[in-house]
Image (cartoon, rainbow, N blue to C red; front, top):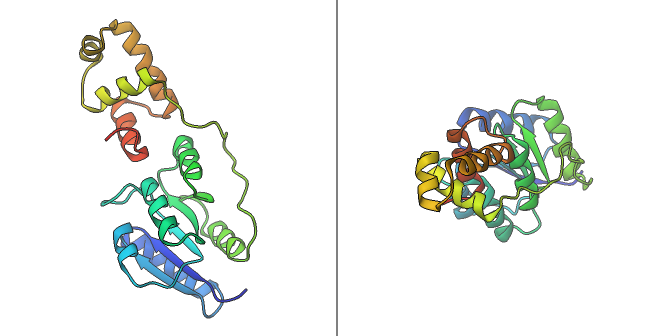
Length: 199
């Protein structure tokens, strides 16, 4: 395997340092591993063009999903791999749709992540996805309800604003929870913000 360059973006210092150390030890001599805690920091640094970017989604300063496009604009030949604890199917689908080649959970075996990194650096195709490839879609009405839900409005308040019955709004909210794989309204709002579905 020729010399390769990897960029690791994660604001969890302990995790980032541990992964960087593993890569430096296990990958061939000459492999460059650069680190950044934020997407903005990575873009501002004079780094060698990475062959592979390992990106967390839950960053303090920016939405990791939105960052995929920024990173690909700067380094169009780099393959982006998401490594995140936020591994709901809807998020995985959205990340792949936005250009990530693979998605790995922080809870998986480090050896598997290492094997996939080695495979991608060798030019092998991305690992087949193990989840349904159905795109994340919300109707225009569901997006309206979601926007108001994220503002903290109750079903009754949403119904009043949209001139719909509370029962209808409740049905929309339940559908939204199912689509976003959220267990409650707060979790749905958090997921929606991370996906960029609401401001």
